[in-house]
Length: 362
Image 1 (cartoon, helix red, strand yellow):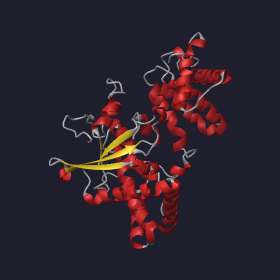
Image 2 (cartoon, one colour):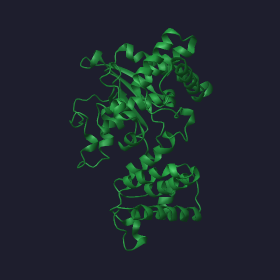
Image 3 (cartoon, one colour):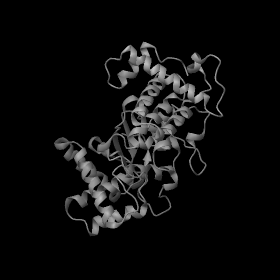
Image 4 (cartoon, helix red, strand yellow):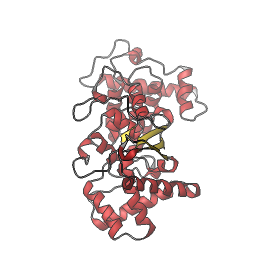
């Protein structure tokens, strides 16, 4: 990785992306020293590649894989204090965002995703909770809402659950999305349906652009209805109170239903996103999963979200699978080295491709 940590351009770029106006020389040096120390520890770990003769050139050693380095750093997290972790993360994020290594962006995306998905931040998103939603518990939730639920709260929970498991959206993203339909006799049900979602984590290059587009065309009118309902719910409440109170009420409803029905795990509104991604992993390639989730690189979903083995496919989940849009898939493909086929491989062994006749969002 190129030794760019102390360059003024890198300092300005890093802090501009985070909305900071100034940075002191002492902070720059602190970032440099801490990054150098961690990289040295990484190279000196048991079984690692030999340390270069000149320790000051450690940042220029191309044998260092930034993704592997970040994974090594994350494995340290349970053994250090939260304040130490934050200082390590800040120094290495500073380092990666100014690196010219081809894998630095992927490593930065992995590092960026750690705190939120570990429940250290984004509490208003309802991130804390299980990174899956068992099908049996999902069915318990729907049945409770239909048979025993009372009032608006049960109705909102029923529709949100059905919408979230299909779209995999972050809870707050419902307030700024838009649904569009256009006739197409060759499409399923004779129309294309596009859901335009403003990516909630579009800063610092973490998202695949400002907006992602989900192709809902394979869904029936009945399956799309809860998506319309949930959009209306959040967009009606957001101008009056923001998104946090709505998310909090959904979280409380999940907790209540879980206790009443004996669910096997503790879930949150964000658990539906994890489960949707786990479901996608059973049929789509890492590139396609990243496009659906709004991630800039496939590694984010691979490292931090629902696991393929927890996917529901094959367990009676008809009517929940959506498709990524062509523009989002192509944007991610352009960032990945073509000589590495792994991100393009689907579970069935086929390669992800973008067919020429794949519909383009309108």
